[in-house]
Amino acid sequence: MRIQVITLFPEEFRRMVDFGVIGRALRDGRVRLETLNPRDFATDRHRTVDDRPYGGGPGMVMAVEPLRSAIRAARDSSVVRQPRVGLLTPQGRRFDQANARDCAKRGELILVCGRYEGVDERLIAREIDEEWSIGDYVLSGGELAAAVVVDSVARLVPGVLGDADSAAQDSFSEGLLDCPHYTRPENVEGDGVPGVLLSGDHEAIRLWRRKQALGRTWQRRPDLLQGRELNEQDRRLLEE
Ligand code: ADE
Image (tube, rainbow, N blue to C red; front, top):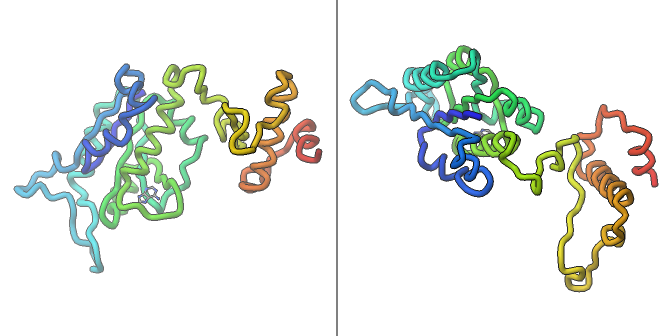
């Protein structure tokens, strides 16, 4: 997987993702992370990367020229014919696990981190395929959001996670929240472990976990169950 990130803060960006399982994937080459700085594409003496908004008002807008050149350089260096270019912005559609899966399948991804008040709308129309938000709050720039995207995509690349931390068992891998987890000791300040997990009965454990996942999703995120047909077994587990 190759991910190119266009950011005014390349070193800071790399540090945000270069640890743990993703750091290992970067080191062993399963995921290639490259950064391009629009400042390196600015042609004026001051290497300007922002400009005043038409119509006035506070704040600046990312200058068109250096950002466009950076995006085109990223596209041109791509080995796939049409690499997906995503802009991180609070105006975008919510980035979800299905998006992460889709990005991981494509093998190449270009992420553009907005700064200041945003990016010129014509540049978005011409150069950006997807506008993604990671939630309904405003960050100071797209870098933290792009780091979230990099992490969620990279961990789906084959071989990045070992069997022990397989992505198949993640929350959302089946559109449900994850079940609760327990480890030693068996007693934490008087709180025990649900008996079924100590029973050794694998089928009973599987059903208990499924029921927990369904129940949690129903309680905490009913939106995830909307429009979804539950199978007979799931319906029974929810009703029990
Ligand atoms: N840039 C600023 N805020 C953001 C958000 N919530 N998601 C994606 N990009 C952003």
